[in-house]
Length: 294
Image 1 (cartoon, one colour):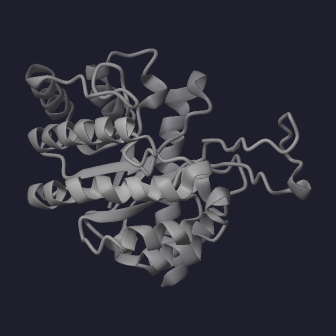
Image 2: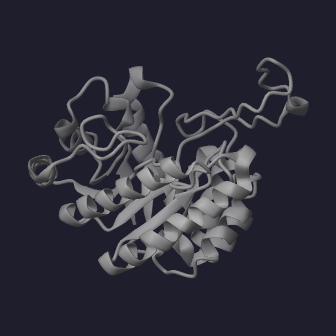
């Protein structure tokens, strides 16, 4: 089991190459590299050259921190063909970078559009026709999160889409803070994913369905905005015992390659204390699940 830090809260206070050192100082042994202007921006071609890749490897080694995974966000399911083709180019380059970094896990999103779900799904499969042979050849595992405001948001349907690729190199990411957009069925979704579950993220969120759907009000009425948070564990409505018990039930917590990522974004002003809290909370959640199952 690996527990990694998502360093997004550090993006405005620290240089990119400082992230591994800070993660180590916070007690983490692993870090997940997420979209950053100096390395792999959102939706754009990766910015890393050979020198930056080498410096990134050195920074991680010097800090005693492993790079667990990369998290790019590209529009590889875009219903707009030019965007989709650009995303495939970006993803090809990112795979090259992952190989050079000796990172074997890429976590990402479907990145299509819900109002054009059928076209987006078609785009996703076109992209996978090009990318999957490369992913499999390089020994990369790509795990996908059905993010809120995507062409597939419900957790069970996302598992079905991933399953249809019939590849051991493509899996599912269960993001705790997306629970209520997935359908609020962590046990069922995680069980359906089974061995395809490649990563889990730990941050809390409020249930936007509560109070007859009026817990959050955005105008104009009836708009399609999706609302969720990335809070520290315990500050929202996610049932964490259910989450960890579901992970335990499929054997995820006993796998050497399993990955849980702390990804709190809502309280940058307390990033240090919250990052330390998250590490201990995740460890405690894992231990509690083992105790309940024994």
